[in-house]
Length: 263
Image (cartoon, rainbow, N blue to C red; front, side, top):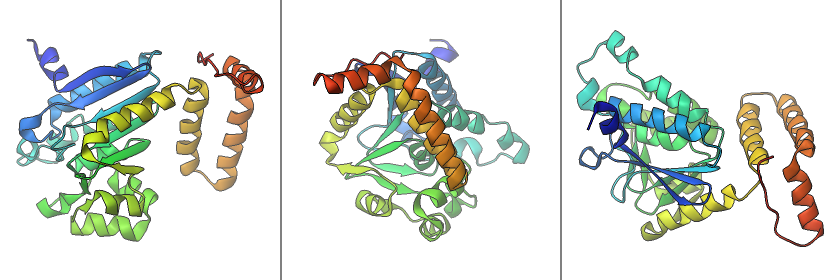
C-alpha cells in the first residue's frame, strides 16, 4: 500500500444511510491520537465530502473505547516552535470547520485535547455514557491549539470554559450535557444507531435550507445581534427562490411527504 493509501486507512469512510457519510478515526492502538498522517487523511476525506453532492450530513466517530485521546505527543514532544508551525494542524481544522454540511460527532470514551476540539467542530455532539471530555494540555506544559480557547468560551461561558482549560480536569457525559457541551447522551450500545438516525433525518431535509441554517448560525455567532438578524432575514428570503421551498409548502398543503432535491 502506498503512503496515501495508508493514510486514508486512518480515516475510514462509509455511508450507513442515504445522504449520510460516516468518518471513523482508525488508530485504535494509539487511542486515535491525532498525528500528521491522520490529520492528512481527515483533510482529504472532508474535502471529498464537501465536494460530494450526494452527501447531506456527516458523522465523525472513534471507536467504542475512545473517540480521540488528543494530539500524538510522541510526534511533537521534542519539536521547536518553527517545526510545530509547519505541522498541518490549522489546515485540517480549517477544512473541517468550513464543511458546509451538518457534522455530528458521536463520542464514546475519552475526547481529550485535540479530540475534544474535533468534537467541538461538530454541529451536534451525541455522547455515549462512557464519554469524557477535557482539555488537559496544561498538564503537559502547553495550551489548547485547535480552537478550544475560543469555542469553549462561546459554548459554555467564560468561567466554565476556563475551569476546564486551567485545571485540565475532564468531565463526564452527564456533566457535559448539563453545561451545554453535548446535545444528548445515550447508552453506549445505542450511540451509532442514534447518530445514524439523526444524520438520516437531517439528510432528508432540504439541503439548501440546511446549509444556510448552519452558515447563518456560525456567521451570526461572530456578529452583533442586529447583523446576525439581517443575515438570517436575507437567507430566509433567498430560500423562496428554491424548488425545495415550493415543494415543501405544497407537500404540507397536500398532506404528503415532501421530496427535496436540493434545487
